[in-house]
Image (tube, helix red, strand yellow):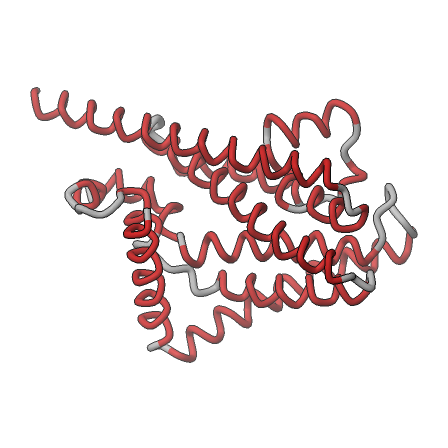
Length: 264
């Protein structure tokens, strides 16, 4: 486990160094994504300010929501950008090269590509959560909760991305399928928690973990809810285990298909 972690950190460091060599492009990618996110959240704030509190959610809560989403998105797609290229790797045959590597297959794939623009999401996310903590007059306990929930939401987001893009092995036109699945997961996460009640809240908490990466973390910090914290933590572990199993099944299917092709 430690060897995989060291390798991942080394690969991420090299990816950042490689991207930073083209400094202008590197900085423009980061700034461009940050500006795009700022424009989006300004629209949300204006909307909340014009209609007042929505479903118990204030403008500060919306800022916190966007902070959690941007951070987990940026962390996963900057450090593990290669996961999104699974469809390209399988179609081009480049995936075979990864299978020959002695390193952990999933870690090797994830760190094979670096998303420089996603660093803009990280910067934006940190700023948003800093503003959120200031607006709610966060206590030390709430600040620690925010840090912990960033880790948990990132694990959930990573698990969802692994599961979604592992479907590349099961479909011919996998790029459209993975794109649709990602939108199904991420789009509901953009909305405040008050938009989901009853059955829809159950669906986007337990069946599709969209609320685990934004809405529920904000509610936990706001209400200091240990019950919800335990729920989110357990579900994060559950979804990560599920995603690894899906990835391993996908690999077995790929190996089986290659064997049949070779045999013919």
